Image 1 (cartoon, helix red, strand yellow):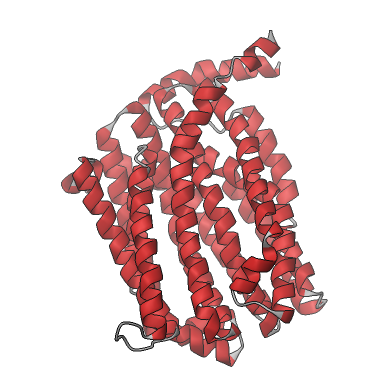
Image 2 (image 1 turned 120 degrees about the vertical axis):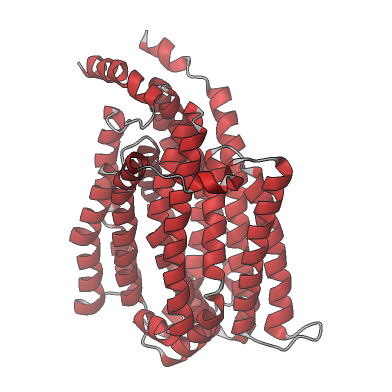
Length: 471
């Protein structure tokens, strides 16, 4: 009987839905990461220090990402569940709150980049040359931050409501503009002055504006309603706002503390020799390629599971979630192995040689083999969030980072002064422990916590079925 139930899972429909949502988002993220790789390649002739400085600036952008991603995660929870229940008012109000909170974060980082770029760079490295180059980049690219965050908010809404092609096409336009303007501004083509690293920042800013304009234009052309319900976005009620921030708060804390923890790790690695910093900068770009591809399927998981929870199809959500963890993890591992196999032409094209090349290879090798577990944890956490459980993954991630990871990195980096690759390995010492605990929670089914009327009505029967299954 059990075997029949397992074989009855609709794999064809499931894989089709995963591909329909996941592949366009994966392609969009790959395009964005490819643009970062091209940035690195085009800056490489300016010298390895320019590559290293660009990587350190990307870490500041990653900190901004951590600060606003909590609102994206919370927003996606509501978008997906209200989309499953077809509650338009809920989608509109949730998007309005998500957009306002994200834009507030982006403005803070914009002002820091524009007004105190030297101070920002001083946090990430003690190398004077890298700090000077990075400050010149931040002083221009800071204008791009609100534009990038605005497009991220719109893309999150479009993905959750299964309109994934619009942000993908907008990314194609943005990446094409970025690559072309890099060529123009970095080296002074077509009569423009040669701006060096500042030219790369200007190209990024213009490309971000193109991305926003393309999303708005195509959404209007396609008749997509939710982005244009401006008044409805701000028609907040006390009950909905309370529910939104209660659900978002654990995710915000998770991403904020995770971002701070990662900054401590990056500060530690930023005190390594310049060759190691340059190798790390290129590795972070390749890491973005892996994560970007994976994030497409993680977004698909959130939508496919969250939509079912909102519609009251709780058993379907449970069965999908179990399969998504292993399927997406396998896809990610294959991508990582592919990058590792092509390491020499890729790292060389991105300006690494000698000691910096060896450092890049070691970072990539360590990461590929821990990424399978790391991304399994990530997808389970995203799935829990989309289903209404924003607490479990948050608690496990924050506690493990501050009790295990940060002390281990600081001790190995500053006290025991182990080789850089060993310090880097300790950045992931918590992942296997969390994986076991997250798996136990996955199979319990307790992460399914609907926010819609239809979902809540179906919850008692689902809980009883899970209880009987364990008995």
